[in-house]
Length: 81
Image: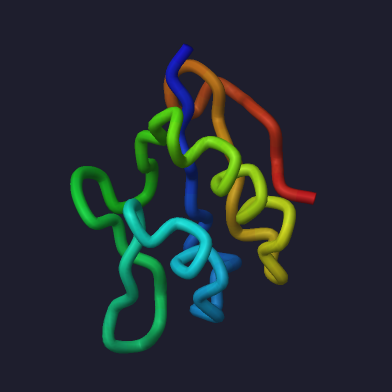
């Protein structure tokens, strides 16, 4: 099953915790907001090696701007919380 990390740009304020937990997937732009190191900017494919860190990033995001989606993007999934 594929998993995707979704970033809700309306909630994110660029604190950068997710970029520290997922350095292989996310970098930071000039303003501190997370940016995908490759591929789609909003929905980032999560590999097995990053699955645990992605779950942790969702749980620790202070603005609840992240969620992990199981299956195809936009089909639901576990929201931050």
